[in-house]
Length: 441
Image (cartoon, rainbow, N blue to C red; front, top):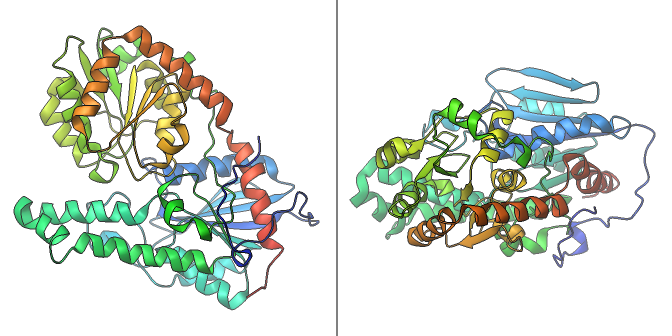
């Protein structure tokens, strides 16, 4: 399976050519990946993506020496193997100092001195955002030292920020004044979004090679600055499998009766992920004859609203370990993913691999990639009535639902790579090609 190539119309200055056989050196390529988020058990898909890539990279020890840098409360080094490790460093100026209710805390500092000292040791630096301290430090460092930078964007951060700021203003100033500040004459939320878009453009214009995000919205605006190779998301097909379905275990573990039609969502329960659609849609669909139950592993400020609206028709178990999450996917009946800003949508793909039909929101990267699957239906992200109607229709035909789920699994087997394939086919060729242009201005 070859790496996905996007026709970006890229100017040569922004991307070195990717030949079929970039020469190998006599030692493994040393790569630093910068993830400006906290490594923790309840981290989101961005962090988990790089954890899976690092685990797969262990098998490439003759070709790759990989260090993934995360935020952490204290300096710490976690060795996965002699050739792969995590390095955790405290942030310079964490968003925790300013606000508590954000989806993921990151570092707003302008320069990370400790990180800069680390970057001296690498052939290639890979940034995974364009906005925060790690990425800023990397671009300043690279200008001085000539170290090549590869970039990949995992989330539509400008839009995520707009949604988050809008919700924060509503919480602080109330539902009458907050929207005026966010979208009125001051348009604070839109200003923040435009600021981040400008920062993203500058970042992509400065890096050696920018990988496409394997999504939709980011490429629509910045496709001309991408090298044409997309960083795909991999999957452990043995872990996420329909064979894990076990309603007896599910009933015992979570108290959900097996006669319920289980509608599932997994991930952050916040406005950025459009999670406010979940409870109203399920409540409206529950007016039909099928007995429904909403199952939502994850954390976020929407959890309280879901519990208040659905009562005992909802289960919110918090963050689940990967093995339990896989069993829960397989034991559910339908998966909802209303987020419009996810470029990858790991949870939706995992649910498809477990044999579930999936409802996706238009505009997300995962919807653009999976729309051709017979087990997927793409809906408007803010149309609660459409989500309710789709849920009710599928709940009324459980056998048809299982057939659609089988189509989801077949599509994943045909089109979604393993994490080892992502390393071998997407990342290593780009990193090696970037390393070949070291020292160019």
